[in-house]
Length: 276
Figure 1: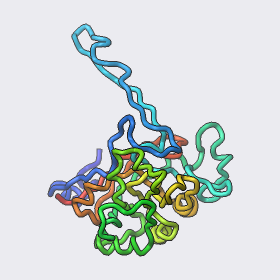
Figure 2: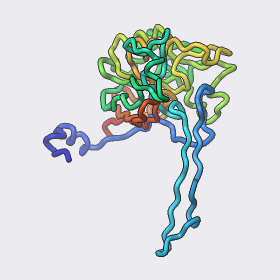
Figure 3: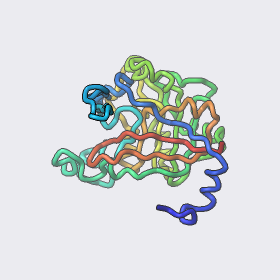
């Protein structure tokens, strides 16, 4: 148990003064939107109340959950993407995945992120509710969004980029946007973020990066820049509308992915904590 002194009087004083928690992730449910490259989410009750009744009249219910590691709001582990056979840091991808799980850069190695976050509302900075399909977020867009937020991401931070596309999450076909394309990060924008030394970045789309109309997920160069070249985790399927409505800028980010050993990604419940 942590004592008040060890916890830090300034931190406890801030909590006691009142905070507001904004959800940055979607609830998980059967049939929700997801990438065509990954298994979907399924939940069903395995036992219902009344199936078995204890002598004292009590009953319990439980469920079975089946999901991919990249379904719903989740964090990409560094094992997720390789380039020319190598993972981040020059790790041999084929060797690392022997035995049915990744021995290096698995989801259990994703750090818990209790750090400074910066909300970069690119859609709002461009004066729109939702970026147009297939739009590529540039370094200039990020600079304008940072200016609007009054904060620029720096070393160890989490950068959350809003495109507005998350408004379509309830319509899986429109959200995946195979025919229309999906707005997202360009390679130029990814380099802008990497240069600032962030630990993770996320957005409100299925693939994080720009997807032109009709292209699907054939190539994902931004994943290479972030995961392979720079060791920066990617958070996908974020929920950004409540944060946008609150005018979120700089915040305390609390992201704690599930520690699934050897996995390439893990569900996460990302939170933004701000003064009440």
